[in-house]
Image (cartoon, rainbow, N blue to C red; front, side, top):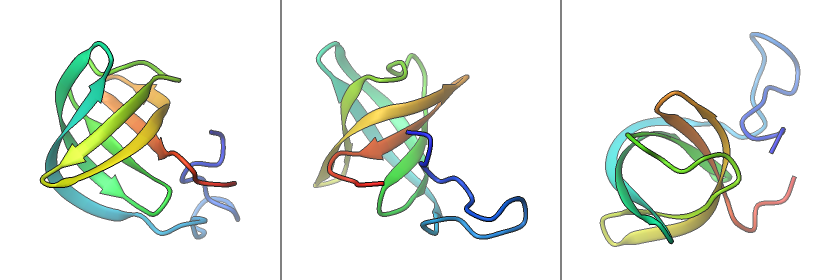
Length: 91
């Protein structure tokens, strides 16, 4: 998922898809269980979430918040943060 949220014209430039900073509580569910997350930003192609003991890079998950849910995959991990790319998004 090298393209997720990356700038297309270098530092200070614009991103491919504009991210919206948010602070939304939700959950990330895998076959191993569900974890509480804080969705920190979101766009049409994915989201950045923060939480404890989240799945590792490459893991499939269901991201939920309220009555909404979307399937995705962990594109990257850094500490307690994960980048999620939503299924069906083309690059």
